[in-house]
Amino acid sequence: MAILKRLAETARPPVAFTLDGKACSALAGDTVLTAVLTQAEQLRVSEFGGGPRAGFCMMGACQDCWMQREDGSRLRACSTYIEPGMRLRSLPPPAAQVAGTLAAAVAGEQAP
Ligand code: FES
Image (cartoon, rainbow, N blue to C red; front, side, top):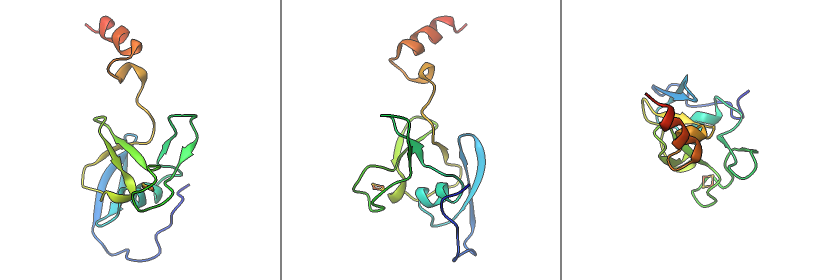
């Protein structure tokens, strides 16, 4: 269930993006935070304990809203506008996909 519910400005053009591989739609001018939280219960899980995170300050100061794109780059969801085709991730990538980890080294050895 989404945390945010859109009540106004519903006539803006739609913007397609994905969240954890699932097709989603936001509206032009939404921040990533708004786009995600109108679809989901959290932006991400904490890397320090797995708890859900949804931003705090909403003005770029607290660092609570960091999210990852599928390519591994990070963005601050409260101060980044959603863009068409953005591929976002709320969950950390599997260890085998994180360069420099033992799991990635093992996965690389097993790759053909
Ligand atoms: S919510 Fe605080 S930096 Fe984004």
